[in-house]
Image (cartoon, rainbow, N blue to C red; front, top):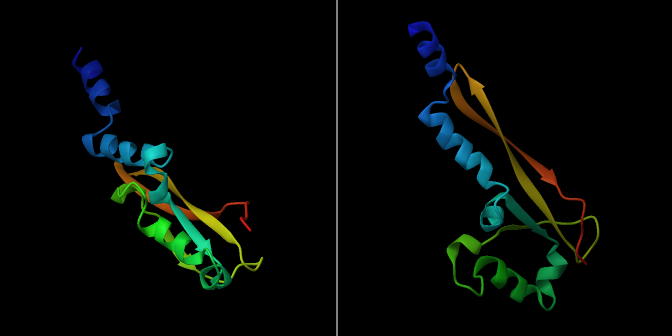
Length: 113
């Protein structure tokens, strides 16, 4: 009986791993998506209307909620006067029984003109 009990305890995820899984799962939560997206804006968008409004909406959402603020970067785009976005993807690994995150940025395949 004792060996079965030890086996069950060993297979149970640690508190740290459970917390890491919560963070990992948030990347697909609609209310958390802005934390995992980087909006890339062509400089021509900024210098023409409604560029200033776009920046204001990204940094100061109409709701006023800080959790709806998006990260953005003004950077030349392949298509002038366009917006693209990158998504941060988290990978959760176990290293010596401890949770470890790895992240990668992926370019979305859409462009707004």
